[in-house]
Every structure is written in structure tokens, then in C-alpha cells.
Amino acid sequence: MQERQVDCVTQANQVIRADKAGAGDTPKLSQSERAYQDLKRRILDNEMPAGFQALEQELAELLGMSRTPVREALIRLADEGIVEIRPRHGMRILPISVADMREIYEILTGLESTAAEVVATRGLSGEKLATLRTAVSDMDVALSKDDLKGWASADERFHNLLVEYSGNERLRTWVNTCRDQAHRARMATLRLRPKPVDSNEDHAAVVEAIERGDAEAARRIHHRHRVRAGAMLVEILELHGITQL
Image (tube, rainbow, N blue to C red; front, side, top):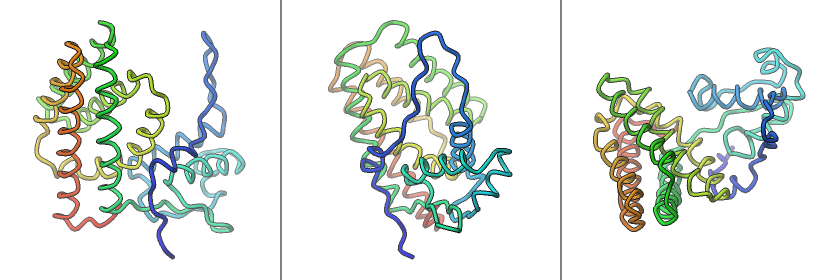
């Protein structure tokens, strides 16, 4: 069966977004949302690898709930290009190929660089600048302890904040969809890559450019950072013969 190709922008337009809770409310996750988040976490962390197949009933038993919220969660994951729904056969987790990763990083490079430029142009409050600096500091601390998972978590937080602070909801949606698809590859190659000291320095330089309102520098530095990161990831996959994840 021909594999479904990953088209991040098209899929992002199909993302079903949960309603936001009203101000001051403490939102309680619906069964459907809980199933979605739980299944997505297991897939992105490679607990359920590419090619894994399961029936709705099996997943419902695993999550301790009925089939209906599981079915709703699978529809969302299918819209994001993460799983394939197979009538009478449940779902199958779609693989991501090296070619997919090239395309994903091309999109991430362009969109996140735009976000950095927008943020630097508009400027940030001292509080928001501090949150970016904290993420960079946490990356430094994690590297000093050789805590690569901690570094990856802080790195992801930095990228999420940068895109969030752009204030562009469509850009944020598209980036998040592509980033989710890239997550499995990043985690699988985390210990195969050189220690990411340069990455920390790039992030710090982007924050400095934003603080002084240098939009061109913020865009250029982040673009260079994403190009280098994407090329390194693809090189590692090819070097180790990892054709898909």
C-alpha cells in the first residue's frame, strides 16, 4: 500500500483544536481529549513505534475508557498525519521517512525564522524576555549535567515560546503540526548527535537580537540554526541507515 505523504501545511489546516476554557476556569479534560493526549504522547515518545497497529477496542482497554473517545482521538491524529485509520483494522502509526524530515525542516526553518523576525519587530516585555532566557539557561544547565532529555525539553520550550510570542495563531498551528511530526526523529537521534553547545549559543543570540529589536539578525540567526539542525538530523538518519521512523 502506498504510504501517505506528509504535507504539514495541508494537515495543519485540518487540525481540530480544542475549545479554550473561559478566563478563570479550571478546564477538565474530556475523555476524547485525554485519549488524544495520551495516545499522542505514546506515539511521539516512540512507545508506540511506526507501523504499530491496534484495534479501537484494544486502545480503549489500554486507556481504560470506551471506544467512542478513542475513535474521536484517532480521527484527530489522522488529520495530523500521525496515524492511518483502517476500517475494521483499527489504526496504524504512519512512518516518517528521511525525505519527510527534509520537507518538515524546510517548513520549520521558514516559519520559525518568520516568527523570530516578527517577535523582534514587535518587541517583548521584560517578563517574556525572561522566559526565553530561562529556557536557554535551562538548556545550559541540562548540558552541563549531560541530561539530553532535559536539554531537549528546554529546547522545545524555547521554540514553543518563540512561536507563541509572534502572536500569529495560524503560524503557531502550522509549526506545532510539523514539530510534532519531527519529534520522533529528534528523540530517536538525541544520543547520536554531537553535544548541542552551538544550539544553545544560537538561542542566546536570537534572544539578544530580539531584545535590541534587530529583526533581520533574529531572522538570520534562527534561519541558520534551523538549517544546520535539519541537515544534521538528516545526516544522522542516513549515516545510521534509519530510513524511516
